[in-house]
Image 1 (cartoon, rainbow, N blue to C red):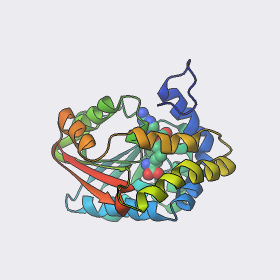
Image 2 (image 1 turned 180 degrees about the vertical axis):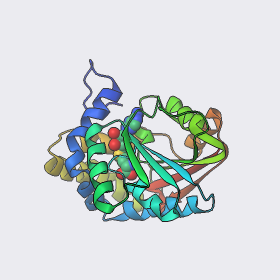
Image 3 (image 1 turned 90 degrees about the vertical axis):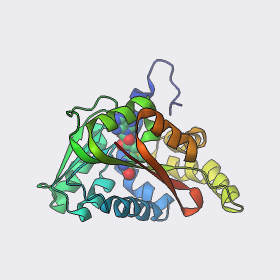
Image 4 (image 1 turned 135 degrees about the vertical axis):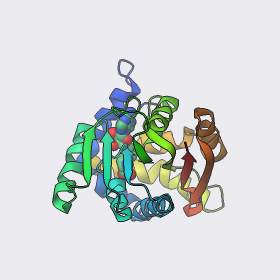
Length: 238
Ligand SMILES: C[S@@+](CC[C@H](N)C(=O)[O-])C[C@H]1O[C@@H](n2cnc3c(N)ncnc32)[C@H](O)[C@@H]1O
């Protein structure tokens, strides 16, 4: 699924354009629309990563860097953030400087489906709300596995769908009407926050996503549902 549905552009081109467009309002909208729960989800992922004690972390689709910043808590030697949108990376870089993390975090423009790193480079690879936007999910996951060290892990945070009454019904209403309305009026992008719930609705979740990870080659794959299933953290090892 493409955000703007323009026939002459690839999903990757449209996604890059969309995140470039919404970058100035991205952080505000994230926290506002989730009432700050997105911050707790990223923290949860970092707590789950703690037991693996990674020294080197790659945060793919890092956006404005919030998951990379949360990973500082683990006191790794180095964190690298990569994103295809240069405008998102600009904001991430400004935040790195402001927060005094220049020695530990490095932010780069890059494509998750063609990572510019050698095989077996990182102890852990993380992705927050990024895999749903990949043009080729299998290729993105394969590239993540390639750059992960043997026995290293991948932790993926992604939206999923709640299945329990009344959360399921409320979430559906909020997704259909609330998110596009708030998103459009604040970001001034007519399509980005319509694409968000639509792409969540069609994206594989739970055992379907676990199976994709297993097929790509991850082992010990598991998932943890968060907030009635509104989001899920997937874990897999190399
Ligand atoms: C919803 S944002 C998530 C940002 C951040 N990880 C977070 O937790 O807020 C998704 C990000 O994925 C990036 N992205 C999409 N496709 C990508 C690709 N092929 N390679 C790298 N980044 C990509 C977008 O540019 C965008 O910044």
